[in-house]
Length: 255
Ligand SMILES: Nc1ncnc2c1ncn2[C@@H]1O[C@H](COP(=O)(O)OP(=O)(O)OP(=O)(O)O)[C@@H](O)[C@H]1O
Image (cartoon, rainbow, N blue to C red; front, side, top):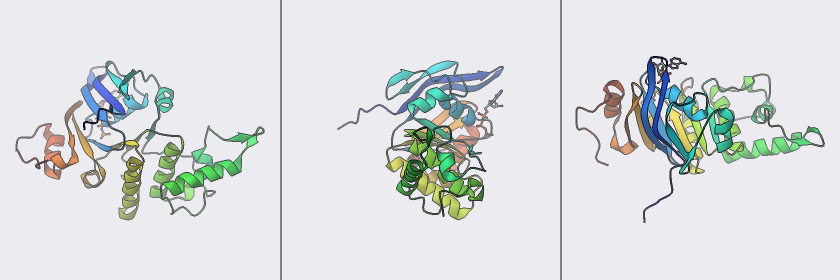
């Protein structure tokens, strides 16, 4: 039977111009629930502009976005977080001097009788971290400044999940990480999609992409050169698309 569930988010003909620069042209992209979509492309291809458009930081000036099949207007970060879109940027936006619980509840603290409800916040933070199998953190009361890069990523992702993200966008999540921490973060991405969350991962690292993604979207000079299930491309065809925007050879893997 055909699954007629609409994708969680669909971009239809999306465009964005910065003065003379057409940063995005006619972008058509579906982000299905429970799947990891990798967004790849060379420097300046438009990846950041696209994720910022979805996150409501850049207003689009053409096309439309559909959320679960219905047209939506995303005018700012509040609109996107209201829909259930959470973005984990490279700098993570964690406060170093605050502990894990304080970071996960920053700006959305639980109160009881007008005071902070620490017990509830600790329970919820612990529960989310353990649901995501983040077991490497010694104490949820340690300041995030004492965490490794991978653990910081995990806290930022857990915060998104705790606040009911339906779409998690990750900007170069493994760029600053070593081998074992990269493996931990890739694992975490897989667990997000297993929970039914749509994940959009921007990455320059094709090894990571081929390990974790279900689908790949290749950008070239502001356009979407190709969107395909990951099995339809190889690393070398992906590189060709990234660098030229086309495939001259017919070396696509049989799907
Ligand atoms: N705020 C801005 N004002 C003017 N031009 C911009 C702005 N942001 C991006 N651009 C331009 O839009 C184009 C796409 O940039 P974008 O940062 O989205 O690319 P990218 O694929 O994320 O690149 P990178 O991998 O280097 O981060 C580039 O030509 C860039 O110079």
